[in-house]
Length: 402
Image (cartoon, rainbow, N blue to C red):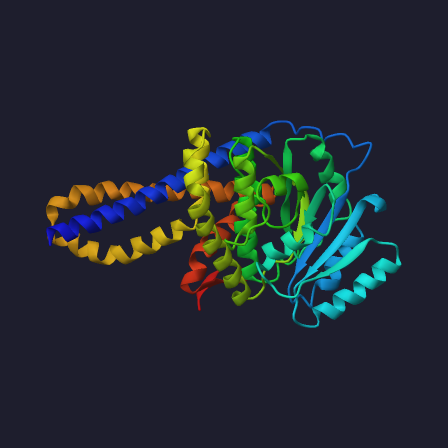
């Protein structure tokens, strides 16, 4: 029995330690981001005398409600027409195909170089579509937008100049949220995503750590894709996978929080669950694929540590689940083993791990809402933790059950 008690305590302690490490890593990213925001902004690169060729890829699958909008937005991009090529990577099985074809034909009649790229099957899903379409273009740069994105007309004019540095392989921009105020669900998603885009990405870049292409709202150098092994479909997060392969080959990533790529957030719980499942499982698959290479590389220890927590970030939820399950038997262990009381008292110190996360989310919320007060942040932070347990917040700022 004593061996079982020790095993439960050790497992509980390992989970607490992992959560503490993750929390401290987020604290370090917050410190790096705050320091970066305090520095004067570097001037944007000069506009190139000879603009490179760009292919804009729009991977879509059964996007009836937004397909025409994203095609129109891509066609409206301000860029030399002789250097711009648009590909609609359409794997749809519904009327999206017809809607896309009609809109493509209309823009083609206006002189836009736009193609409808169809495949006989969906092998490799999005990664397969991107890989297939890359063969159909010889452009130097490739911009990618998911179907729910609406890039601003000046998007390419503000991102392409950064490729004047031959070492830059990717330019990623910040996501904005077209339907943030639609419901509490979209507000909470925006709250969480803002932390990633306002703090985490900025902090990683400022510290010289690995960042990631977010799957959309960014531009790749074609040579970077090819030299890093191309798009691969053995993980559900082909964007994170290729990001790590590229950075392990010393390609530089640029993140531009001042350039916004507006998009819609999933408004239904089923769509959100599907998205989160893909991100969580894909992150774990990418960790299995690349974590060993990262740890064996000659990267600085701090970068290895940040990459470890980056790739294993979904494990935090598993650790929290294990803590929740173990808390019940450990109540009885504490009651029947008074000699372990000191260990339980020391474990209570780990409650302080919440403070760095509050600081992390507060910093992101402050950058996203510079004129707002504490109240809405407390409400958002509180709701983000209570929502999964059945609590809902009213528009008046009160929390209620059910």
